[in-house]
Length: 309
Image (cartoon, rainbow, N blue to C red; front, side, top):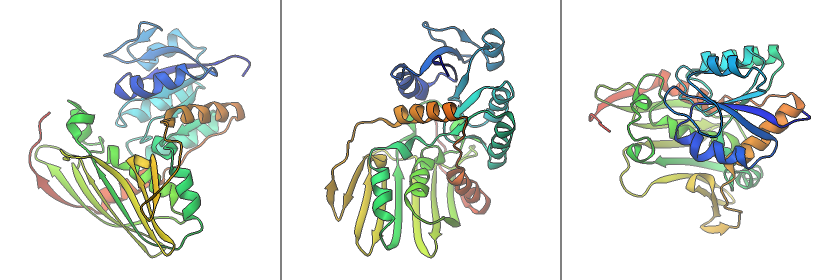
């Protein structure tokens, strides 16, 4: 494009304000032109109550970035794609694998860019871990993802409703890293969910997986009230690799490996989005959401204590 990419944002919640807006402002290839949210607005650009209203008022938008919850996202993302807009989707890309696959197919027919983002893959140490593991003999993998739902999602009841993903809203970040750094595909064997009373999505989960015979154990918990943990540990014949702080830090046999720990996850996502648009290409990977979908299919579920925000 000969001009900055004219961008609209749909959904103006915490993730949009904390991550998307600063990344857009720092990238001269983008110009934020509008936002759409029925409950929020920005003073700096026109604000609309819906995507439909935004597209009608500003048909010259080039691209739309979606920061809405996954439930209901398929319909609005489809509306943008059919209007000829390039689309960037916050993780997870949709509420179901089928919905995500449909968006991929329609974007290809419309010849627009579709970018299904996994921001945790852009954490500082992920690519270095991937490169090291490509030459290693992996023997076992553990994932430990624990955080406090009240801290990160205060009052957001949707996250424990059907289609809200529950503990997999953060847990899928760990799965996105896992599917990036392991050199072979992952298969889910079993799952165990804890679902709070009167809710529909798990607040804790344990997954049993394997990758070409290598055992993988993963535990996710939204009830954590102490030190939070976002760690992946990979045992290999060459040593033990640990990715901590959500992929920001790397150590091998407890020796920290030097990486640039500056948080550039969303800057890298928008850099990638700009390049994809320039090349009229898409970047879509559904491996993390497929593992979550498989877990919901086979999970043994028990009832947990009721939760209120």
